[in-house]
Length: 160
Image (cartoon, rainbow, N blue to C red; front, side, top):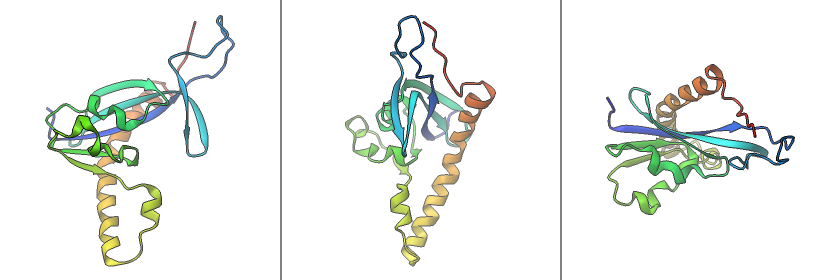
């Protein structure tokens, strides 16, 4: 039974960038993306997880260069009151497809903004709020561990 909250997130699944196959080219469904200062080639797995139970209710696979924020519409079941996401989902409430949604968006601050917080009373309250968001969002990491470690999808394989 799905409750009123959804946690959305995405993870990179690597693919070999080798061109040593019959066609002599990379997998056309995979792309490269930069995370931090590191480049990756592969795909992204986007999931929507129930915030209370941790059950996955939506999954979508895309090339790695697809932005997380563009997939949110496909990861929600439509009866959410609260939606939680990491900093990759900043600005999701401004997108046209979400203007008619009556949800509260709980999106994490970007790391640079969080580092800029001082030791003032107001900033300590913001830090506490960010910690609460992080504890709720932690439930979304368990399905990624299952997919990558137990199911073995740490790296995709391509055969022509």
